[in-house]
Every structure is written in C-alpha cells, then in structure tokens.
Amino acid sequence: MVVNNFSEVVARLLAARPGRVFVFSGPSGAGKSTVCRALLESVAGLVFSVSHTTRPPRAGEEEGLHYHFVSDEEFDRIKREGGFIEFALVHGHWYGTSRAQLEAGLANGDVVLDVDVQGARGIKAAFPAAVGVFVLPPSAEALRSRLVDRGQNDPDDIERRLAEAEIEMGAAGEFDYYIINDRLEEAVAAAACIVGAERHRIPPEEGER
Image 1 (cartoon, rainbow, N blue to C red):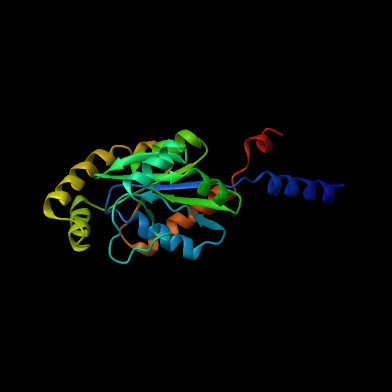
Image 2: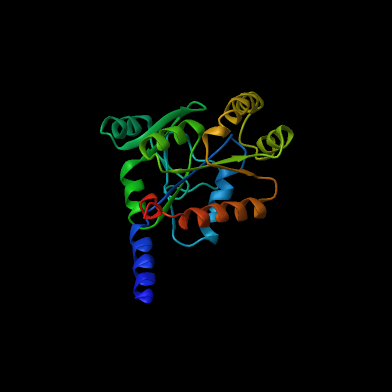
C-alpha cells in the first residue's frame, strides 16, 4: 500500500506539471539575450520563443534564430489578426510575441522569452503564472560600457537607452526573481537554478491534499 501511495503521488506530480513560461527582461544592455542563449544551451527541455520585430538585423543576428524580422506592414497584419500575445514600441521599433509560437513551445516543453519590460507586463497579463526574471547590470557604469562597446548605437541613442534604463530599473519589483549579470557563468547558473526550482514547485492542488 505504501509503495502504491508513493507511485500515485509521483504520477500525480508528473501529470500535473504544466509547461512553464520564463520571461527574461531588463534594461537594454543588461545582457538578458546572452543569458538566455547560454541557458538554452545548458538546460534541457527549454524552447525559445522567437519574437517578431520591425528593426533591422544587427551584425551576427539570423532570421528565425534571434528574431523574425518583418516589415511594418507585415507586423500590422499579424497584429490586426490577433497573432500577438503582446506587442510594444521599443526604441522606435515594434516588437511582438507570437501567440502560435508560444503555444507550440508550451506543447513541447518550458518556454523562454527575452522581452523588454513592456513585453513582460503583457506576457504576465496573458499568462499570470509566467515566471518573471529581471536581469540587471552590476552598475550604471557597466551598463554604459556595454552599450558603448557593442558598437550598435550612436551616442544619442545610448543616452536615450540609459535614461530609459533608469525607469525600467524601477520595474524590478514586478518580477519574481532577479539576476545581477556581472559574470556570465554565474548569471547563467542562477538562471538554471530558477528553472530548476520552478520545475519542482508543488502544484497548488497537490499542496491542498
């Protein structure tokens, strides 16, 4: 009887485990995309939800891997047809999360999203159980250095991003976890711990038994 009880509990926990949505967000230049890519390489069972954007590709970015790069007209069409769970205008370009791609990802595992703070709020509204992870730099000076060193933004754009980063930092309390991305390997290890902890969370209905 005891063995059967053990088996029943394990079976219920495994059967009740839903696909989870992990939303990584933070200021531009905090390194959330780098953390997400390394996390996907180190933890099994994670699916990356590729966002749509109207901005042009940066050096090294590939269509369908980093983003789906679309025209303003194509983005508007998808938006009109209800194809985005959330969308937002960020730094002069549109970004959106595909409803179909997110749902397909959940059917195959846990989904990782890399979005701005506006996008994270939209995902949380659509998926209240989504796990929010706020990635932040170790200091304002480090953030400025990263934006300058990546060579993708002119001085005026960098100043705008830094000003917006100050506002976005105030949203950290809206998230479930935070990661200070000082050393990449430590940040990725922290992200992996978060995923592991959430995967072993007891579902509310089991806790009430």
